[in-house]
Amino acid sequence: MKVNIQSLQNGVNAFEFDAPVEELLFDSQGLNVNSVAVKSLVDKGEQNIVVSSHIKACVEMTCDSCLEAFDGRVEDSFTILYASEKESLGDDEMTRLLASGTHSIDLTEGVRESMLLSLPMRYKCSDACKGLCDQCGADLNKTACGCTQERVDPRWQGLEKLFGGESGNG
Ligand SMILES: [Zn+2]
Ligand SMILES: [Zn+2]
Image (cartoon, rainbow, N blue to C red; front, top):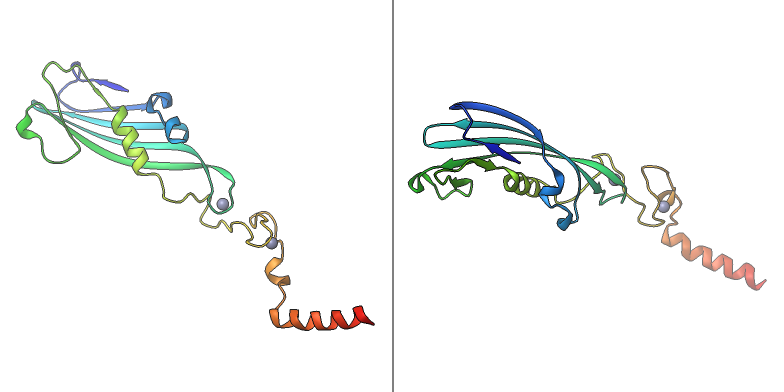
């Protein structure tokens, strides 16, 4: 995922590409990534290059509530400043030194980091997901198992035992 900067005109250059998913090494994270679309604006100046990228990824996720697999979307933006002089580098993590004679800028690492940082803490297939029934385990998005309705009031349960015992003895 390299942008050739030598052939670039000064000013803003727009790039759009699909990131090669295998290069991003998400397998090691246990992530099943289907696609990552990247749009970058590369602003080339005399000394510095500013690369602003927006990523849109499609990731196979498993819902933490209902345990169904679903296609999750991940979007993020990040900007990296490439400076040709050390003095221009801030404390910011998003700055890199651009060694003289550098032909290209590799966006792979930035895209990878940005994706990992923008993954949700909990996966949910939809905001309306009802999850699984905590009693019978039924997927409440698909069926109404009726457990909560049929749950017997513990006070009645005691009475049932009493009556059940009587009829059993008789
Ligand atoms: Zn769900
Ligand atoms: Zn149930």
